[in-house]
Image (cartoon, rainbow, N blue to C red; front, side, top):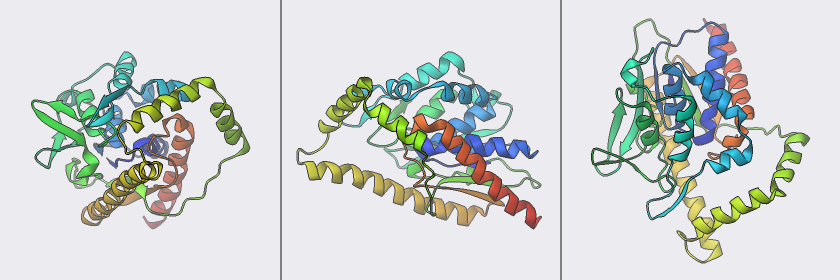
Length: 291
């Protein structure tokens, strides 16, 4: 099984895995990039259930409080606080001791090469693989500066262990396919309530201050700066994903629309997991009809 990068949309991987298991499929190996590395690594280590339970227990302000801002030219977030909290419920493990073979992909930004974690600390692998450029500061290990694996390999089909009889399942949460929002009145009411929460306003004020220290003063340029980064990364990841899928020829491709949720929508975990389950169910129905 191969799990793509995609920020918070990668939470959908949890729903896809749940649907596969519900139908009796046995996952024999996992590779992943960025959020795919986090979900895949926790699954391969036998800890995904604990992570899902913890994630669903967080409200929106809990999620925001896990963002540890810093003032550095190479990123806005340290990325240490959330992993520190995760370690309280899921201790670190060595990848080589996992129940299933697992590979996580990061990018050596200095030398322009892939870094593949198949042994060593799970949390080191996760921290390296999730380091979205300009958002997280790079992860350094043994003198190597590493960023998000999606820069070079958002769908690491070439790093998953396979046996001849295995079905290759790929989950792409960056698919450029139509998405129709089903936002209901309750969700809209919760959004309005959140915006009136003084804690949320304080968070937004802090976030704005951090961002403004890294971008031009002109308001129009500020919007252009972040839109340019997001759109550039999205287009790059999409094209690399298409090439990986074309070359890897998965038996089952599960596409999650890239417009469904934002890369920072971690507080919408329940809805994202449900979306993953529903889309996986439809894809599996079609696949099983062809068998």
